[in-house]
Length: 458
Image 1 (tube, rainbow, N blue to C red):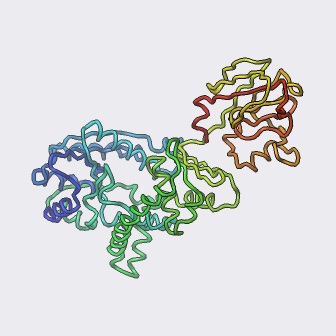
Image 2 (cartoon, rainbow, N blue to C red):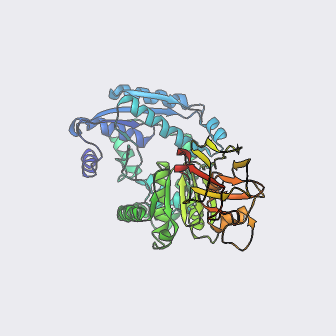
Image 3 (cartoon, helix red, strand yellow):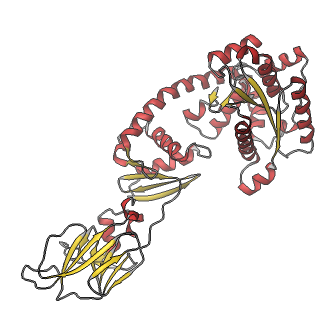
C-alpha cells in the first residue's frame, strides 16, 4: 500500500519536498488511512504533516470523535488543530441544506487553519467510492460534462491522494497495521443525498455491473482529461469575445452567438468564474439562464446569481459581482452665464455669444432670443418628452433611449438641459428647435466637461 501511495503522489506531483501539508481528519477509515500513510511516508516524500479536525455540532457524540482524533495524532506525533462550528445554525441562517452548510464550514475551517499553520496544501481523504458517488450526485442534479469530471486529484489548495483506492483497500490497510477508526452514524442517515446514493443507488447499480464503481471513476478520469482540452479552447474564446474588463467583464453578444453551441456555455461558465473568483453555488440552471439571456430576443435583461450579476444590454453582456446602480445626478438651476461645478465632478461653462460657433457632442448652442434663463440641468424623469433634431415629431424620452439603445444604468446618469421641454440630451442629441441662425445676435453656448463619475459608465 505504501508503494502504491507514493507512486500515485509522485506521478501526479501532489506533494513536493519541503512542503507542509494539512490533513483533514474526521476519524473515519479514509481520513485515518490518509493520515497514517502521509506520516509513514513523510520522510520519503520530504514533507511535514499536520492535522485538522472540525466538530460540526450535528451529533451529541461529536466531542468523542474529536477526542479520538486527538489520541490518534498524539500517537502519530502529528500537530493537531481542532475547531467547532454549529452547522445546524449555519444551515438555518443561510437557508441551505445541512450538507451544503457542513461542506462550506469545513472548507473555510481548513483554509483558515492551513494559512495559520503555514501549510501550502490540504489533503482530503476522498477515495474511489467517493468519486463514484460524486459523479452520480452531480448527474442527478443535471450537471454537464464539466461537473461529471468530478473531483480532481489536485484542485488548489486541496489534494486527494487516495482517489485511486477503493474503500475496502483502505480498511484492509488499517486492519493489517492495527489502526482503529470510528464509524460516523450520520454516514447512514438517509436524509442526506450522498448517503442514499452510497447505500441505495450504488448497490442497485452493482446488480447490473459489479464493477460500476470502477467504471464510473474511469469515466470521470476521461472527462477530466477532456476538460483540460476544453479549458484551452475556453480561454481562447473568452479573449475573443471580451470587450472590456475594467469594471467586471463585458462580452460581445454577437461574438458569443457565433461560438459553437458546445463552447458557448463553457465560455459563459469561465467568464462567471473569472468575475466571482470561483463557481461555488453556481448550478447548471444558472448557466442555462445566462445562455437564455444571451439568446433572447429581448434587448435588455438581468439576472441575480449567487455572488454575481449578469446583465444583457443590447449587444453587450455584462458580468459583475453586484448589480450596478444607476447614478442619479443632483439637479442644478442655471440662472445665467458662468461656470458651474456639477455633482459628477464635471463642469458646465455657460456663455452668451454674439453668433453661433462650432458644436460637438459636448458643446451645444441655442437661440438666446427664443430661449432664456433660468434653465435646468438635471437627470431623466419619468414622463419626460423630447423632440430629437431630425425626427418628425416628439416622443417619450424613454422611447428615444430605447431607439438609441442607451442602456438602463446609463439613462439616469445622462445630463439633460431643459426649460419647459428637453432641449439637449447631453452627449447624445439636441432638440429640433431653437438652433441659432448665422445672423443671430444672441447665442447661449453650453460647454460640458465630464467628471470621473461619467468616464466609466456602463
